[in-house]
Length: 95
Image 1 (cartoon, one colour):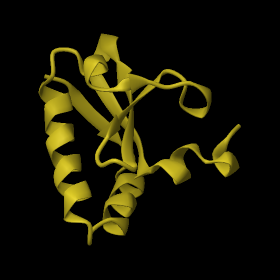
Image 2 (cartoon, helix red, strand yellow; image 1 turned 180 degrees about the vertical axis):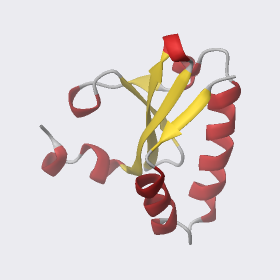
Image 3 (cartoon, rainbow, N blue to C red; image 1 turned 120 degrees about the vertical axis):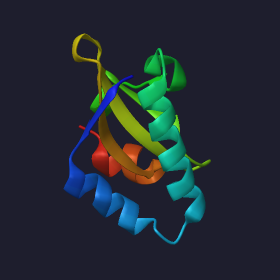
Image 4 (spheres, helix red, strand yellow; image 1 turned 135 degrees about the vertical axis):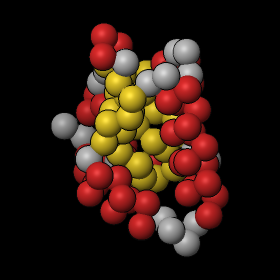
């Protein structure tokens, strides 16, 4: 089992933003449980590059994703961000 680590304020703020969209909330909860119980959480997502280098992304819906990072030696999954594709990867967010 993997331990989850996240900025409570940031992730809760994002969840409140999508509270009216039950699909996002339901899928978020389901995926977080699956990640924590996974033998290899890397296999659940896609490795990212650019701003989210060394992170993985997994779709919650067609247009919304969860970004996470894995710390193998500590068996920790850090939840980085949750948002729609435009806000996560849009031109304004590029570094």
